[in-house]
Image 1 (cartoon, one colour):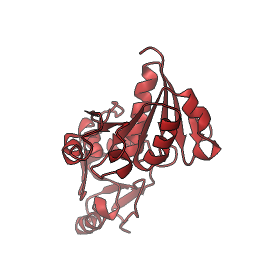
Image 2 (cartoon, helix red, strand yellow):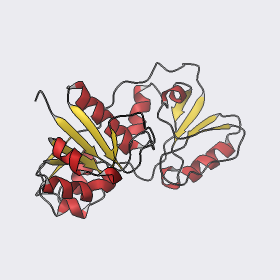
Image 3 (spheres, helix red, strand yellow):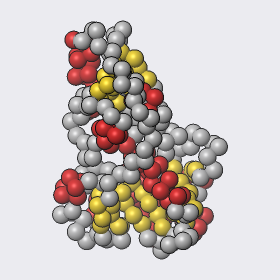
Length: 239
């Protein structure tokens, strides 16, 4: 397909917060643009006013749905995206980042579904049998320089409770001679130890400069459907 107008109708983009969903959306946007397709991103909140691809839902959706050829949505935007896509007769794709069931997707066969991993597919396919589906892993563009081979820091990305925040605090406390870098996650209350051997970094998109300073990634999540952070760090040469 040479020319296509793609509308991403999603809760947030990387200008507002950075987590797996936003990063996956950003990589999908890049993939579409590299094919020469036009992209618009419809979100709840815009922080970067200079990004002309971003449009706010409160400003209206009809113009964007009339403009597009296809809609891609995820997470909390399923319902509104479906209603608009149905009204304007546009095909819609739901990208599933986790194995949580969404009633709006399950009850409407018009949704085309993309699973982010075999695990997600195995968990959800019995409930989405009526939906056309594909398994497509997140697109990970190489964006990391070769890490410093002398780096000794232990890296932690997202320190909320479900990601292992309490355990991170205890480990850092028990290893006072080991340096830790904690990059705050884009969601959830962050559990941060007040210790001299812990450097705390605010939620950000340019995590590569911290990855190349690190030797090991510590990842103690209760749940991961794909483990994007682990894959990125493996690509950068971390253990």
